[in-house]
Image (cartoon, rainbow, N blue to C red):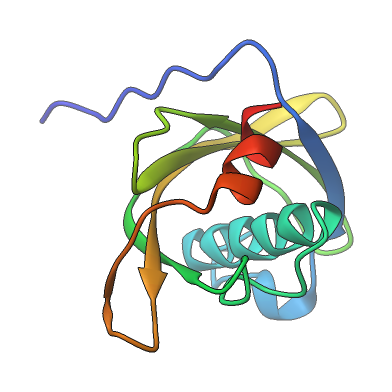
Length: 140
């Protein structure tokens, strides 16, 4: 079976750290695969906060919706470990963009991932264009 290959961008525009909680640990005694997605979500939320947005559904009058996810697991992390999560934005189109993540601990890569994010007008229930103000922020 062919494995997913995910090439990361060379430059990241945001970094945060999150401590592994006991609820993030699976029956194997290490960071669970589902917890990695949760850590990515928290990091993306913090990234949007750093741009001045209170959440992912209050971005200049519209919100975001996750269209797809790819995660490649590279190593283990354990309860209490401090995970560094770096974020990069690429493949920006009129209505969507990709968020890339690099998760590491103590210099060791834990996972690399990508989420496809689509702008969504929750009031109208449909996909919409990326607001200009937000577009300017994620392009820098």
